[in-house]
Length: 386
Image 1 (cartoon, rainbow, N blue to C red):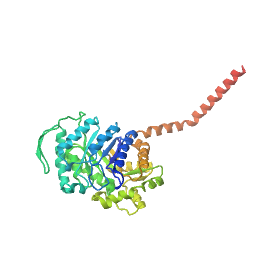
Image 2: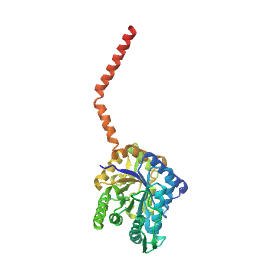
Image 3: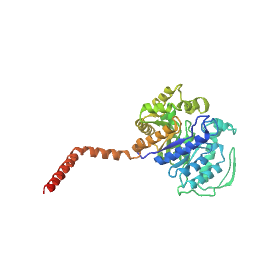
Image 4: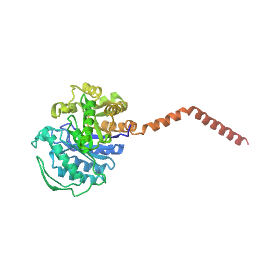
C-alpha cells in the first residue's frame, strides 16, 4: 500500500443555539491540535445557512488557523464556486498560497446547501452548471492566462492575476463529488484532485467511490489529461475511544443533532441516513459501513476496507461532526494518530518487527545476561577475598 495521508474535513458541524464564537475558537484550537499530532491536511468548508455549518469563508478561517498551525496543509473544503466571481476566488487562493508558504489546496464545489443558493436566486442545477464554467476560468487564471469571458453571473475583461504561485508547481486543485457525476467529470477534464465527500454515508457508498473514479479516468482519457489516485481524498466519519463501550457513550453527546440536521434541516438528501434513536444511529454508522464508532482496531479495518473497495486513494479525511464533547473529540483524534495512522504510513510495522525479533532471542539473551551477572559477582568476591 502506498503511504496514505490523513486529515480532517471540518464543515464544521455545531448544534444550533450554542455560542458560535466559542465554537469557532474550538475549531481553531482543534486544527492546532491536529497540527501537533502530525495530521497532513485540514479542509475547511463554506456554508451560509441552516445554523450548523457556520464558517462562511474558508479563506478567512484558514488565514487565522495558519497563524497557529505552522506545518499542516489547508484545503478549502470546499469553496462554493457557483456563488462567487471566479477571478476573486483565484486571487484569494493565490493570497492564501503566499500567506501559508504554499500549504494551500484549492477545493471547489457547487455549494451543498440549497438554502444558500436560494438566497442568491440559484437552483441546484444552476450551481452545478456554474461550477463547470467557473472552474474552467479559475484553472486558466491560476496558470497565468488572461481571461475575457461572460458567464451567467459575471463578466471578465482581460482578467489576470497579479501574483504567481508560491511554489513552482502551482496551487493543487480538487473538486468535490457526493452523488452526481459532476465533480468526477471535472476532475478528469482538468486532471485535478477529486474529493469524495460523504461517499460512505449512503448504503451504496463503496460503489459510489468506484463510480466516481471511473468517471474521472474516462473524462481524463477524453480530454487528454491524467488523474492520479494520490490526489483522491475520501471523507468519512469516525469517533474512536479505548473501548467500544466508551466510544458509544461519548457520541451520545451529539450524534442525535447530527442525524437530525441531515434528516430534517439541510435539504441535502444525499447525506441523509435513517435512524430514530441514539443506539439505532450508532448501529447504522457501524453496520452500514458508513463510519466507525468504536476502537482503533475498528478504524484500521474501515480504512483498509475503503482502500480495498476503492482500489486505492491518497488521503483519508475524517469528517468533523461534534458527535462527542470537545475533550473526547480531541482524544479520538489523538488515538487515531497514535494507533491508526502508523499502520498506513509505514511506521507501525518496523517497530512490531523489531519487537518480534527481540522476543525470538529473548530467552537466550536473558541467559547471557544472568551469566554476566554471575561472572561479575564471582569476580568481585575474588577481589574482595584477595
